Image 1 (cartoon, rainbow, N blue to C red):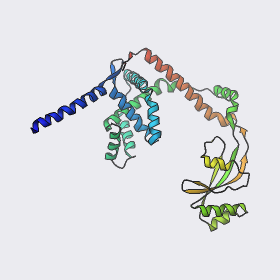
Image 2 (tube, rainbow, N blue to C red; image 1 turned 60 degrees about the horizontal axis):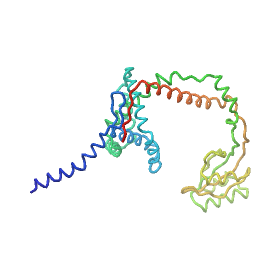
Image 3 (cartoon, rainbow, N blue to C red; image 1 turned 45 degrees about the vertical axis):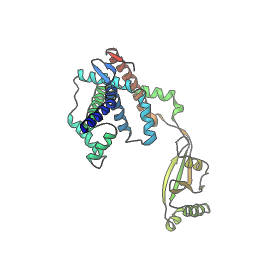
Image 4 (tube, helix red, strand yellow; image 1 turned 60 degrees about the vertical axis):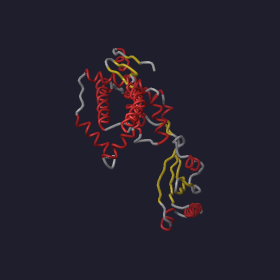
Length: 303
């Protein structure tokens, strides 16, 4: 009877597990002589989630990953095409570079087992991570060789862009502020009142416990709403009422206003250089990828 029950349990497990295996092994695309399965897509998405999880958490992470899901297959196809070209060009990655990167990642964790648990949450093991890092390095290497190294921004292009887009290089009006940071509402009200009746900040610092800082603010800077609503109502020399932000209280004193002005070409040059280089790089990368796609066999299978 026990043996019959055991066989029945195994049979039930297989009934539910086999469809899962089939779904994982389902071929979703063919690129040249390689197949892309649903598992490849899932692993790719999990790796992206792992990368983003260092910067964002919770709902923001879920939204970022979901946005990536929309064009995930196209990205994976492009990666396979690029990696195939890297193989043709015999580009290799030193295994020590991969180990160094893995060691960098390990430093973010208290132990190897903690990292393994984090990887397991994403359906990955360290070997998957090593493989993804190696592929990423191969991709960067061939893009550097075939595309990035050939992108040049000439000085006359920077000058032309500046002259045609001067309105983009207007430095906005700036407010120069002193910030007083206090631990309690009562103390904040006291210090705010004393400043408004003419007490010197240095004198108050000798009597009360608080810290100070400097802030340069301009509209459109994406300041917290509590700060923006306060500082842009102040006149020069005026002191705000206490503003509670998280668990602390802040007082703002407007020291000066620097008017809007046109940035010179020298001041704007670095930003223009970076913008034009990135635009040229994206255009060149898209053109190179399209050429590779024309030379490749790509078939996306219907669901």
